Length: 365
Image (cartoon, rainbow, N blue to C red; front, top):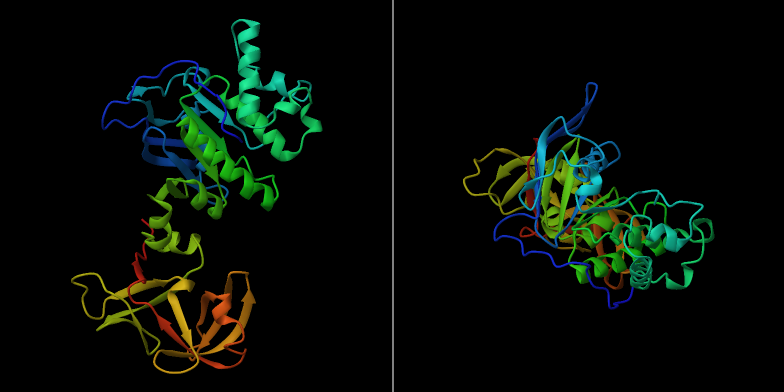
């Protein structure tokens, strides 16, 4: 998606200092006795890209539809620049929506799909369609029909149609789920670059954690209709607030034990961890060690184990180490470092980085 002469159709007033561009306040939605969204609150600043991340059934799509106006909350409010839009129809919310299925009209051309909701003089509509087609790099395809396009091209049409009315917000519901991995990586980079150029406030839904971490300014991890944690991708990955987030995001080595001098003792082994201030001796704790935060050596000081498996992943080698207790630990090391150094079945020594370990909350609420 190349930079073009794309311009907005109207000037927008600057956001009042300190006021969120979009605010969701205590929104709840239930279907019969099943609570889909449970008193959720969060805010987006103007131009911010926030992703709702979670497994199927966690409520992320329902929450997106409540923001868009396709569903009405049982309680709570949705504010656009401080204005309550909870009762407004979707067409009056200034929000462009990209559906998971793209929802293109099969009997209309690309140009007709993009311009479906445009009004005004024909010449102005045609200029707008041409402008948007260039923006998302489908201008040679405007005369084709959806069935003549690839999945990636259909996604670009849906994105152009969502931008046609010059929305204040862009809402996307798993728009890349039907694409293969290579195309997803390419399009997500292009999407983020486009959003940055336009400065449009974006709320994105996905179950793909790699996609969420790569795209977002902030990620909201959802579970059972609630936001478990919201923060920057680095916060979510390196400083998970709960055990659920620690296990949901990335690969985790969770060590459950008790606080001792210098760390957490589990199964007769002390794992070096910087404990929180005023931690009582003997307190039950769970420490998180990401695979890349574990060093490995053939001998010397550390935690003894046996190398069980080694999987080549390109830049890294993923190693499985079995401790004397039977616990299996995952270690990621640079492949240029790991290749051939430790044969399978050989004795190795783990060297955890105590400054990288994190104590996580056992209770999810």
